[in-house]
Image (cartoon, rainbow, N blue to C red; front, side, top):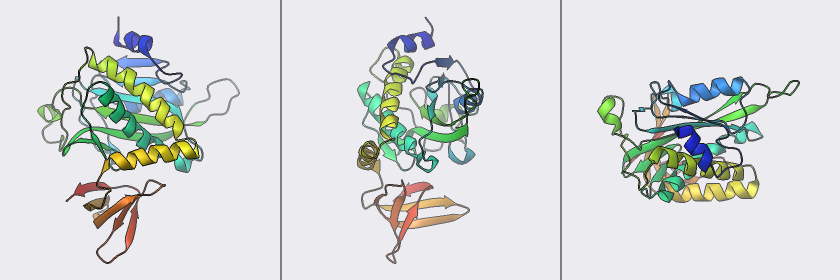
Amino acid sequence: MSAAEKITRRLRTSRFGRPTIVLDSADSTMALARELAEAGAPIGTAVLAHEQTRGRGRRGRPFVSPRGGFYLTVIDAAIEPLSDAWRVGFAAALAAREALIELGGPEIQIDWPNDLLLGRGKVGGILTEVVSAGARAPGAAALPVSLIGIGLNIGPEPSASAPEEAGPARALPALACAEPFVEVAVALLARVELLCGRCRSTAGWRNVLESFRHFAVSTHGRRVLVHTGAGTSIEGTSEGIAEDGALLVRRADGRVERLRAGDMLRE
């Protein structure tokens, strides 16, 4: 039985993973999911791979994706208004954490805005995008969709295959399950569907945000240095995460900066 068949038989979802596509190797599950979405693939379509040859992180950076890891992108209807579509990234990070714990994995933490940490090692990452999807029925309007990408280092050390690009990436400890790829897929798809669904209501989003704040490092009065791009950086003390996802950083002069994106170095 193929991995896709095993995952499909065990699914605990109403939409996510229906259908499930599993590839031995892919350039990028995000790129393939985008092509499928533009061709009218149904909401819930999940693309998984054991290896990515051109895995991508934020800002077009490479995401080292050696064979034996877990790489997923699922197509979901975009949250309206589109200005709130970023919420699913927070939900996906929480979903990954919960799925790994369910399978006997460690208590990983979340590094704003999209990294999954074990100690100071990066064991996974989240990437989300909104794209224009193709119409799913004759005469139907094409609606924007979210691509929710999750990469988890459940296999070998990333530095073994790409020592110059791996950076802080580290492998997760072995999970207590017989078929990690299949079981991670089943647990993760269930969690992602649940938590992304909560992001669509005010009360549900507040629940997701509070959980994200609780498990996020560097958001509880710690000294941080955030590289915001174009050679600029913000240094100060973190004061939490606002409802719009911004990291609040108080500078030495008392000003509070609201950062929507950046690369954070904790002191």
